[in-house]
Structure formats: structure tokens, C-alpha cells
Image (cartoon, rainbow, N blue to C red; front, side, top):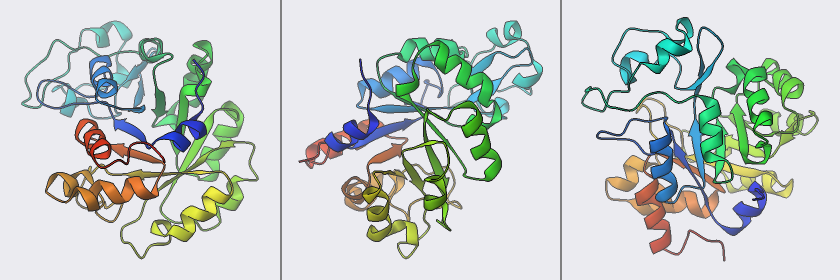
Length: 277
């Protein structure tokens, strides 16, 4: 199966499930959460990667062991054998039957099924890229991180041919600079606190698109103190204003990252926005 993110985005709004679908007894960042996300309409899933003490890569958000496992442990200090015995907690803090998956397991499980956004890529770039190439899945992978010089040097060194989006809250010359780097620069994740911000403007999106770049927006809310998209968000949509929360994003962006993939997908279908006309 051939994956082409630009072609896919020209046909439909690309929906990315942040850590899969999770809640209740289903924890995030595991194969079940990702399977549910795909069943509910996700085109892409976002994953986090943590390295064990013996070098194995696991799908887990760094430094969130207490929150998701309920124990004061640190994966980077544990062996693979020790990590295999751990179990996720549900959202009441009770232990589930679900263990942690390795990056190898995740890649094999999702091969040929969806796009995969690898977050926290800069922590272990060489090791992550080696596994992506081993599974022959470069076309499915979207890397994201900040566009600071050290991070971009890592991309150029380890993954110049793998699709990459810088995460930016202001341009400051980033777009023009990115075009000069030996990086497969396909677009940007745009963060904006108010509708007056440059990155919220139609003019800025048009500038990117004239150069063949995609525009990514977040409807997720991980803290009320960190506004990612001028309150065009999952919270706004679910609290009663889906037009402002989701509709505007679908009308103006190519990729939407959400924590509520099912309701968002259903809303876009209902309003005729899921597919480009």
C-alpha cells in the first residue's frame, strides 16, 4: 500500500488521534488505543517513545510513569524484562491487563494501515530511524519537533528523507530557512493563542501552501494555560460549539490532531467536511 500524505490531504481532512483513543478502562499509547482510533476514523496516530535502560524503545510518554502506571519507576532505568511486567492503569488509577508495547511491535502492527506521527523524536533519533527503516515504513512516518538548529541537524543527519514538520508558534524566518535544509519538509504544526497571531492568518497558510506545504492544527487541550489554537478546540466543540471548535479548523487546515477522534470524524461527516470537494 502506497502512502502519500499530500495526496491524502488533497482528498480529505487528515485526522490524527493524539495517543490513540483512550479513556475509561482504555489507556493511551498502546495497540488497542490505536486500533480503536482507526476504527473511529483516524488517518494518523500520534505516538511517544521512551528508551529503556537496556536500549529497547517503548511506546510511552517520557516521565509519565506515575500518571500512567501508578508507580514511582523510571523506564530509562529499567530492563526490557522488567518493563514487560508493568501494566497500565485506567483513568481511575486501577491496574489494567494492558502492558507496554515496543516501537517494533507498534510499527509491525500498523504497517500498511495509517500514517504515524512520531513525537519526542529528538530524544533518540538514530535508534528510532533505524527501526523505521528496518520495517520499511518511511512513507507512513511523520516526524515533528521544534526547529531549533540542534534538532534540525539531527534530522539532516539521521532522517533527511523522512517527512518532517517543525512545530512553531511564530515564523521568524523558519519557513524560508526550512526550505534551505536537507530535510523532507512537508509543512508546519502551527500554534497560536489568538486569532490575531500571524500563524492563525489565512495569509500565512496561503504562503505555506504556495510552496506545497501542509498546515497542521491542534484541537487537543493538554492544559488550559497552554492555548494551542485560539480555543478552536475539542473542549469548545464538545461544550456546544462544534462549528468554532472543529468546523473552522477543518475548513482551514490540512491535518487536525484531536483527543476525540470519533465525535470529530462524525461531525465532519455530518457537515460534509470530511472529504475535499
